[in-house]
Image 1 (cartoon, rainbow, N blue to C red):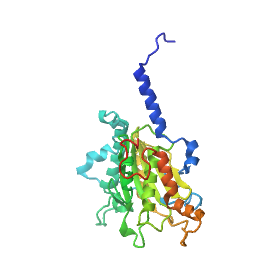
Image 2 (spheres, helix red, strand yellow):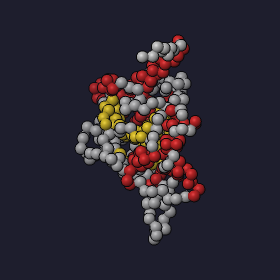
Image 3 (cartoon, helix red, strand yellow):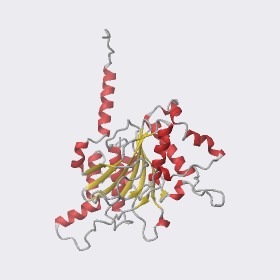
Image 4 (tube, one colour):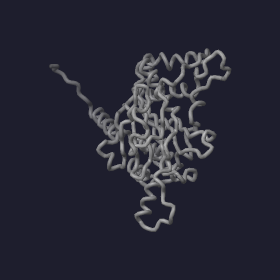
Length: 345
């Protein structure tokens, strides 16, 4: 047994206590899910990243995204212009962790996010095998159902949520996607895809930032003029943490609150694991948009009773607005644009 023990100064102890307290505030205790109106389940996937069960197998947890699986993702077409970048995101996952600029947890999340962006937007894929096929090889963005909408999107995040969503230096939404209009001539679905960067230790539990981002997007869609006939807003979120970890969330609003199916953590710490995880996430980003977001149907007659009025309010986002206010009490969902900086974390 050592005779001398390390001692901590008062400032060190205070800093450690503050770190632990901040960590506890980031993660939502699973025992509070029911109180908050969160129905959280495991997103069960097979080894290829496809749903383990058929979409209609559980009516209480409808499916709105159908991932293609990692094996569907075709190899990258060689391009001398981007050979170093491709090598970095296929063979450099182990060496990059020693780089001094990737020691910070948020920097680690940003690196994984950068790799995901390059693989989705830039590299062309061998979906049209030569010879005999003169078509230009597509990138995955072109084959997907999504159109990137930039960072601050009024149709996805109402202005009153901006400071709460983008007011932190530890986390922020990354890319925001909405369905391509031309693919849906009979009506664009309300589905959304978002990447979320959280510069914190990964956890299997839900983070407050994930819930805030999901609910802010759903409330905005439910209150907008574009999707008046929709009572359900499906959102796919790819959350990227420090230590090269990520997960997929399939979420949708309901009159009870928030239905969430979250995957286990995907690992990017080795080249082998990273390449497999990358293809699975890309398979999700190229998922088919399925399901009927119009159910349950809202009553079309004039609401006469308080009970029916309450039902309509819940279906159109009332439960989610309350949930957002409880997750971010400093700002509240009804404030306009005067959120205190850092309210989101």
